[in-house]
Image (cartoon, rainbow, N blue to C red; front, side):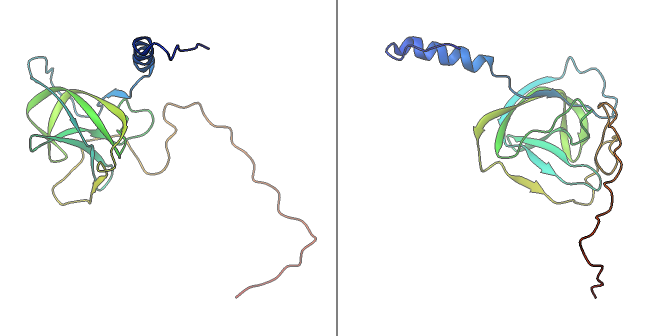
Length: 173
């Protein structure tokens, strides 16, 4: 535990800055079954945007908009994926390199991409688009239902025993 001297504004500001640098922001790289080429020569890009969710027939796609262009961030997969979707109602910092000629989920691809969720609430960042014909997600390993990929196997439990009296058996129609 530490104390902050409130009588010295410079020291207070410096302490708050040091504390802010210790708080990790969410950053992840996009992962899909698409084999992207090495993109070290791609045009670098960075921007702050509201994340947008585009529903598809199987998994949601995430993208951000910068200067009128949509940029693909990743898809929602299971917990074993290296891409963890951003949060709605928060802006994201998007950094990476534009992959020329590639489009996923109807948006230009940034590869590699790093996203960082900004901590400030932004209620305007709450856009979810419905499934549309022509918007296909990239190949992925996400099946229906909850996933346990990347987790230790769960212990199976026996169902609890049936209830015992005092009660009367009744039939309801």
